[in-house]
Length: 346
Image (cartoon, rainbow, N blue to C red; front, top):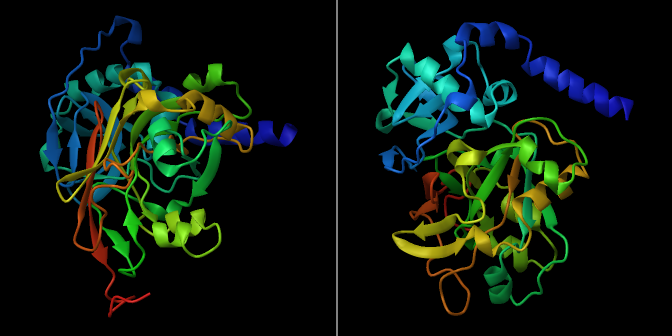
């Protein structure tokens, strides 16, 4: 227990070293005085569409520098000059309900850049953990012919799989039988361990979209359980476009959709979940200390064909578009790595 407490203290000290200096500089508006009005005018840019009025992310700004950014009412504001070098720092110091206060202060002294002209990156760079869940939608369980799981069936993807909006999903074989899985992904904002579901909302900072790309050949047809191998290839976890504060996302009624080459492959609503977001976060926290930037995936909805299979599966040259209503969409093209696989074989 002492080791765990020490770890938490180190994390907090690492990210909050200049906390009060920044807070004094920002002179942030009290969140109690803010009124949030939904604003769902979609704005598209390279590989993404943003539907939310407010969010946190990463972007390449003029000069080629990648830094944390605020996305606010269709414009992008760099946070590097405000003393932030990582989105984890922002989440630790600025609660989701306070983010609009920060946005108003920053936007009052900076004109920002048009969202449509900015290259967004994966919101969280190199997360420590990506925790996923298998079969968490009732319709998906029915199409898969399995019983509803009594407890969340958790597994991991590794950080090498993370890419951002517009980045390619690279495959080294045309025979891996790719599939895309659109998911609502929770992003942890403060350290947490062994928390009950009732406390999970306090540690989740916000939500984004994740495409859990999977090689069905390696998952199902090699004769052994290969969830890690099937899902943790480099580039197999496109994420984005931004992290939307938790109070701005209707997690019990969010439409999810995966479109491949213009054809809807998966579609569903988070109201069909077997285990709630908070239950998943709670169970995940019993096995490991959750730290800022950890990503908790919540499962994918069913396919759109009568037999339960996706209407269109991705292959080299395909474009996958994964969307969550109220957050936005990410687009990623599947490309064949010609250097690793010049002839398209295994």
